[in-house]
Length: 316
Image (cartoon, rainbow, N blue to C red; front, side, top):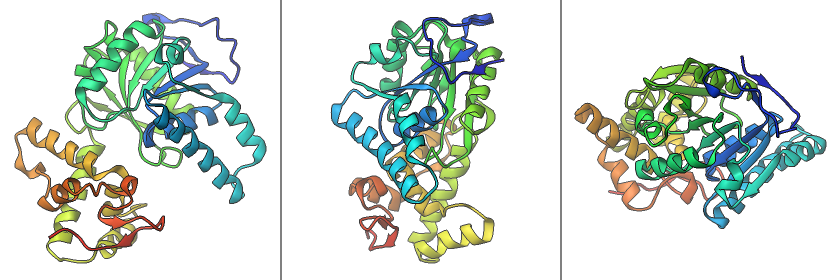
């Protein structure tokens, strides 16, 4: 069973069967975007030495600023203390060199955009750079874990670790096993998830896994309803929040995740299952083509310029 440590004498690792480390002391997160920064934040808050890497200096700086702003907001709201922020900040370190970021990592979590070639390239590098005992997780919402693992010489150490946005708040962690994922890797990932305060579910490596198939299908149907004039965006979202106890409506959630991300997942499902039921709705395609990708661009289905979701005109 994996043990979680809050101490970092990291020149020593206990190694169990299959070569996996039995204690997490250092985590490396690859990619400092919205998801990567959120994952790094949670890891730092879990007491682990956390290395956040991004290939782009401006992206790395934004990621660190995003984490700092989240902690400051928690202090302002009385949910956390300055002492907690200081402790967590001491755990968090930014890196512009991936080799240095992963050199002592017991767990590596990749969180870059959903581009297969990019993820394969990164895992090929991780295979060369990360310690042999390291657990290698990929935060993909729809790509094949087996294909990503095939870029390494240790596919048994590779598992899907699909977090949800915003990572510090959402409690679910979807773990995705491919055919070669070892039981030791699954156990280690489940233990790591529990240490982060997440509830884990374990699913098979099939397109869209469990959550993405359900989530994007609901979001696509909500966009269809919006385009058909069934109700306003706010009313559709309110129906799901109050009628079905969803924490957030499907349209606001699509904006939060990124309309381009949702569109790409739908296209992947459409191709994988040869089923046009997953085809992105034309309104979704128009929004993406117009650069209206959601909260990250300030406008998507909603206008987010005020910091809150406000209804706005949609493309014809």
